[in-house]
Length: 497
Image (cartoon, helix red, strand yellow):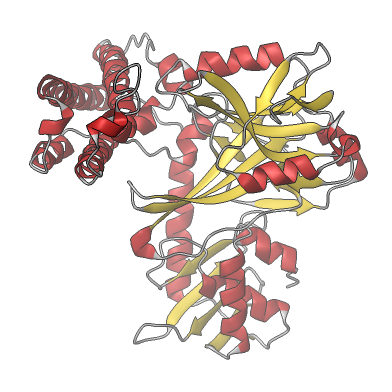
């Protein structure tokens, strides 16, 4: 059997940490047995790990297009480092003993085959399933009612009156299958308590020194400490309201079985409501809903890692531009603090997913893939990317405003802009212009590295090229602006974050 390094990287989804650790396992001699079937459809072995006993791992090539890794280690993400290590041992030319496939691996193969066949079958709605789904909607609507009462009490009594005791009510939401809403209430409580603490810790104000000609205009506003909480309050209000309407439609659909009216289908596919309620999509479900595409080529235009203190997690975020459709997609890898997992990394080639799964959402939907190949960027790719931006800024701004008016949609959409001209006004504010002279301000406030990098580029590098930028809204100045993420020229992708 011949295995290339690209085959191995494709199987482990380009995760550099898994690749590095798998190589170390081979180099350090952790594999105590290496085996291969006579028909070369399976490799398996035993590897010394952190457990008391060696882990038994394998990689199945019964379907060469869909290699499958298995292992007895506790890692839920497959293939794990032990399975990838098997392939690196094969790639490095280590001797593999040829023999019959053990019964345990044959049983695992049959089990996975049966599971794949079951998932491939279309999900048929029966009378029993329809009644079960309608009952679940009833339970969820009861949870929505409880959430509405909780939100009403917060508004009625004021956010200063909220205490840790509110967490008891939040835990009650766990009985109603709306884990997403429960999480958002937990976030709200955290933001409120943080705002209370910041307000109480603030230094006392000297009223005599603060008084000006127009009164106490220089007094700090305590409401500043609660701005995140108030935004979360608005989001929760909209989420509860929209969820009620959606669940009522969904309940009516199942109650009318077998004459389903599908009034909730459009809401499901055009928004992230199911995920916001707490549902986790299966890839087979996305495929059945038509949310899967093939033949897509993606180029990563930006990559960043940020910390979500409220939810206690790190997020690896990639911004991807489709070469064909020029759509912008987002990938997010969430790493809870407690797991202490290493981050992902930037990707500088053309990535070709075998199947691109697109989650329901708005302008920049989240995507995922299981297997992929890649190739180097060609001059033709750079030419296509450099002209992939929108040339009508009026249409871009209109689309941004439509999205941010929806409190449930992503409030910081990403667009690709085709820049005709870049200029600086008298106050040294940087802006980009379209062919009609429409201006979009670039305001990298708090991101000095962004500001210095974009300002250091020459006009030849910028004008006539594509700028990938994230739109934001400055509420204090009532200003819509764009934060530069990357500049795509006819020769390079210049990351600006």
